[in-house]
Image (cartoon, one colour):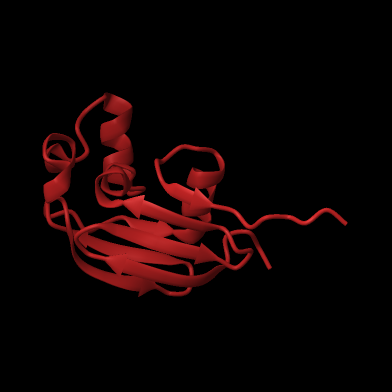
Length: 116
């Protein structure tokens, strides 16, 4: 089992994306930070130039929503955002790295390890 394997995914189109990884770690991503972290080539290029990825997510984060959500095979999420963007696939491996490396804000819980 890899750290990024998932047990479940729940998408609340107006609030958050919740992922339970197979090792028991859970992450709840609020929508605006998730939208701003879009991994697509266009959004990556905008971030490198210092340009806005989503003016709606930046200016009115409470208004960003997910219009459609679907699995991208067994390895990620395909999200269609209310600001019209729909090209980024959110790979579970990448999302796990975001929380492990504290790159994208998320509420994270980790299972307690009982000492032997």
